[in-house]
Length: 338
Image (cartoon, rainbow, N blue to C red; front, side, top):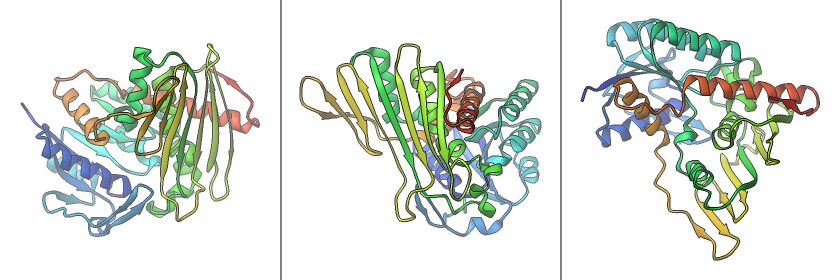
């Protein structure tokens, strides 16, 4: 099988997680080869990064060509895919630039800062014939796909309600403190809470209305409580925060009440508590979500797979739903019809 050549653009915090994913892909002999890394700041290649997912020490990059100019990297390497791990306010600009230079694109979430930018990216993807995929990686996470499977097979009965959490201290590792600048990051609601917004859509479909309240101390939309209402009466609630204590660790979890069981996820384990019978821990495969999403795009580029779990259109709809939540927050939590 032909192999897909990848260049990584940006080498900040999240790029270190992507690098580990490429190592896993090499171990499983996936048809993906990371060949080069680019960052405007060459010191990024020799220092570690401390982020909310845990610290990352300096990486050995001897196997890769290193660049500080993106266009030079593309001209020299001629990659099939560019993996964009730049700050959010650069996603639209560089995704468009890379597609116009002949590359397929995997871009970190959020897809862009606005629906208008998302539409522009989708338009360029159509014009160039290139694949554009957005890293809403929870769609490949076993703990969330366990819920997806139970909703599909109905083994726990119909859904009653669900609650999602995603909590962190304010990120401090970003280039020029861009996370603190709401105009460049979109705040917690767009940068981190968007994972749970996307999961709500992925698991339950489009809500009939949404509402949200937010507050901020060091940036706008720093803390958010979102509610998603459905025609059948199901209520979904999600909390996101960039205002946890500096000493706290990142946390993500959920609790979901089905008619016949409750399901809890505490950032490590999925526990099922049936109405009748003893609780048990779900037997799930070890998560390799970032490696899986990268391989998904590679196999699509090769024509081997048609998995469209994270199409650009899907990612754009999630950004649009975040905009509806912001609209509600701007009107003191007034529900907004979808």
